Figure 1 (cartoon, rainbow, N blue to C red):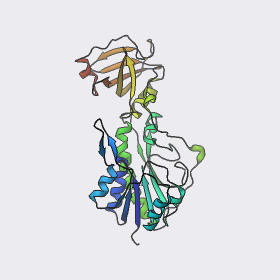
Figure 2: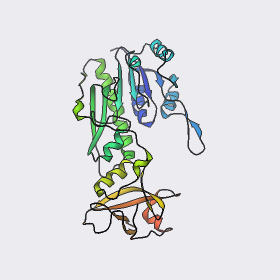
Figure 3: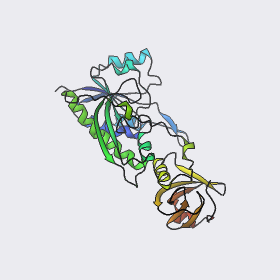
Figure 4: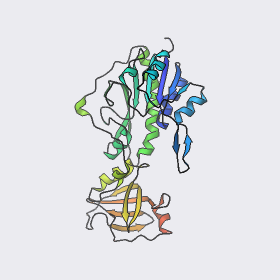
Amino acid sequence: MSQLRIIFMGTPDFAVPSLQGLIDGPDEVITVICQPDRKKGRGKKVSAPPIKELALQNNIPILQPTAIRTDAFLDQISELQADLIVVAAYGRILPGSLLELPRMGTINVHGSLLPKYRGAAPIQWAVIRGETETGVTIMQVDKGMDTGDILMPASLPISEEDTSGSLFSQVAELGGKSLVKAVALLKTGELPPIKQDDSLATDAPMLNKEMGHLDWASEAKELHCMIRGLDPWPSAYSFLAEKRFRFFKPEVVLGKVKEAPGTLCRADKRGLLIATGKDYLLVKEIQPEGKKRMTVQACLCGMQLPVGEQFS
């Protein structure tokens, strides 16, 4: 089978295992397209996307267009005469005119088991909604939001301790391995597309900081999933004595609740025991306002927390 000429489109860490898998494989990555360099951190230092750094290490030509819906950009891609475009967390919706340029079309590495969790934050929403498994789907890209035909799904379990952060690298690695297998099967015509069942579709919209404000009237199980799903960003939080506390490493403690939801029932080296709408939530790590993330035990060495008061 002849070597494919592949254009890779991706930007963040999630896309790195996919690009590395293609680089290590038998085909040729002729160009990498990623988002422009951005200012990051408190010092606003300009940083290159992880995908750009990997491309530079492997001497692959790089494009960082500010606009992809222009005739000039489409002409530039057309001249490359690619066989296939591979997308992994590029960060923009691609125009149909671009998708159709390669003779084998465009495929995407999506971080969920489609049709569940179409959108920008599939891993986070799988945890928030209490799913017990997630995975990746290698799919054909069409003009919709993750609505294209399924080529290859691959799953992995979600444990009670997993956060979106811990799952991120697992899903990314699974995506890279699945992509390599899918491209090999595409070359031999052994990967027939399967239509998605739209009736089973769920959305995974972008996260925002406001959604991290916890409602303690919810059940402990729901709060447990919310805290894990928003770890590390934007993180779950609440206020006590007018100070914001961010919460990490939760555990559900079964028991009939007598206190008002949000009441801090206990604060010791085991964590913060907080009343909820059903059962209790034990929080083992917190981040007090203006401080770093730490264990509750470490926090109590320098701060007294008012047991009996309510988180709002």
